[in-house]
Length: 461
Image (tube, rainbow, N blue to C red; front, side, top):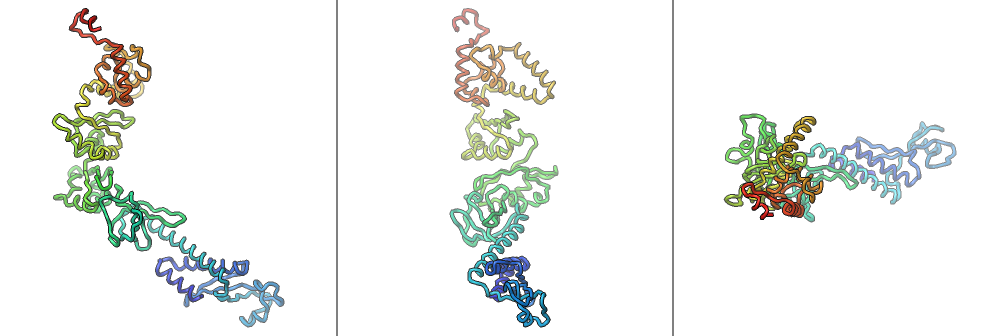
């Protein structure tokens, strides 16, 4: 059995790449546990390894006495002298034990402890090796597939690629070689879990670093990248040098660079757009391939933007802006970090006065506190002199007035110019509330025509 143990140790060191001292420690723990199971103590057991032969040696430390009270700890002088002629009473002597001198249960316990300890050591080695490679590209071979999950052979261990990290465009065969992004490395009771991905945005980012030297060197920076795996990727790029075009650099001469990346991800579309610190310009670029007519920042605090596209000739630009299943505007929102609402120009006719009022209100908040308060009073005084305050309408409660004023509508004269559809476009006002506001206006407000005389006015009333 000793020889079998030694062979097993050498095999583990060779196959698993586990350092010999760690393997020996695991074997030592197992043998000590087996000794304790048989003799109910481990105080006097010693395990050592013969470096030359590779054999595992096990000893029991015993005291030399005239009369043996406990054979586990004591040995008589005659027996000790047979092992060592120089032995004397009161000395301690190491008595070699045959490794196979254990019961079947004790031996099984030793094997189990050794196996557990070796698995723990192997997990630690794998974890320490791959945790430092997290966020890198890694190569492996498809080993098997189960319930949509791919198991990738990485050499010393196995990685997994869940369905959520795969592209629906890609199908792999058993044994096929592939590149993947090392997404995460986790350790639990079952072992080290290595998650690989070909569906995350970072995978495409890494492909740009491989195919575009300027990206790897930091001359061209990818400021943001979002992706719906299998359908479309949007990447915002920026050049640290004025003479270098970031988009042209990523595309390459005759599109060679970008086509290499597209082939690697199964033909998925990639939009490369220019990053801008001006949020309006950035949103405009992010809406590519749609051409945007104008952009309104509805609320900087809530990061809400309204994108207007032309529909005077046809709805092509509106369809491009929305994208299939809303994908284009969804990716643009994720890339810019703003909630983007797309509208046609025909839907926003007559809304200019509301936008002007909203812009005026936003300008107030860009000043310091005292100046903002002073300018706000001036705006209110001006509006009071130019129009009728909303609180003159009895059927409007404070909540309704507050919502309207937040959207730049502060006078009755401004409000009567908006119909139900216009009001429903304002943040915080739904179709039901818009219908209520229009009804109150119709019931409470009489529109006077300056060109008509008093008689005409009374007839209208």
